[in-house]
Image (cartoon, rainbow, N blue to C red; front, side, top):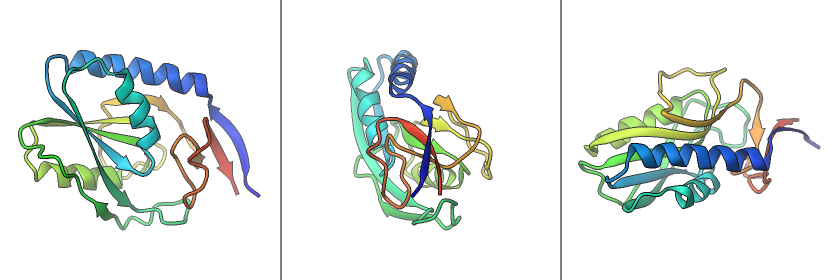
Length: 173
């Protein structure tokens, strides 16, 4: 049975999401923004984030990529499982991630989206975790920085389990 240690409490998640949504709203005021959520992990954070934005024109789409499978470390082999449907040509795009860890998946997704000629691409992550960063990626908006450990809860999973936990935990097998 895994052992869970709390890392980010529910109230802290909410407070950080409101804080980052205000910054994003200020940065994109008067512009159309396309939020691209990275499935499956970012769906909970994206839902909370978008409801806090004060922008008039927001579109939401999703893409899905995988590099973990049922393991706790990235395989490094990234597979695009679902692409976006919205035309992002000339648009401001904000990629919304649950966590940026090695950065390999995010770097792959940014390269993929750039081929669609957006006006700009920035990244928002619930968690920026730099301990194992292998790709030079920029997280423009981060709610929290966590130094180490395998995290679950609030969308983050282990083999598709524990996404439903309302807080973020270190999981030890």
